[in-house]
Every structure is written in C-alpha cells, then in structure tokens.
Image (cartoon, rainbow, N blue to C red; front, side):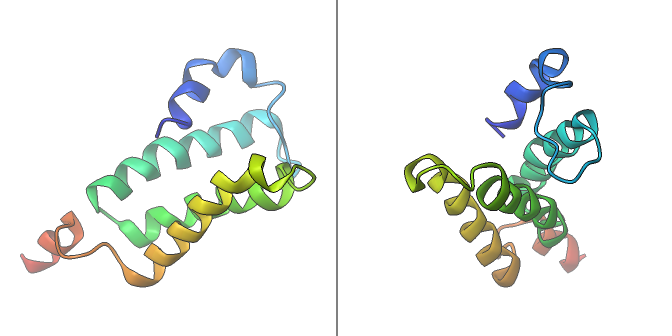
Length: 107
C-alpha cells in the first residue's frame, strides 16, 4: 500500500508520464496500478477475497520485474521479485485461518 498511496497523491504529475507497457495509455496504466497497489493490497491485508485480490498484484509485480525494470540490475528490481514470489505463494496457499475469508465462509 505504501507504493500506491504516493502514486495516488501525485496522480496529476504522473498521469501523462507513467509507464504504458500494454499500450492502453499512461492514465489507464496508472489507474490500474493504483487499484492493485491500494485496493487489492487492502483486501489482501484483511484477508478478504484474497485469491482474487492477488491476481492484479501479481500482474503489476510481474510487469514491474519483467518489463519496466528488465534492464535494471537485480538490486533495483529485487523488491518487485520478492513481492511477486510472495503473492504467487499466497495465491496457491490461500489467506489462512485468521482471514475474513475464513470467517465469512463459516457463516
């Protein structure tokens, strides 16, 4: 969430210069990235809709690692790789017993 909030606050500055790896336009790319890094990250923290929330996060981190920072040294892109691995592991393992998903499904 600490990556999405600054992007949201600087929307006006970033909307025309944000990376556009899929040709959708920088504004749409920025909006989707903010949605993933804020909205989906909040759902992940709560454990609500965990597997569904992880899909946009995995896409954003995969694009960051393999496309945006592809030419950068590993030290500059290792955080994106770290998140990508963790998100992928959570996708397969699920939210866990203290998540809202677990509580919701009990009812």
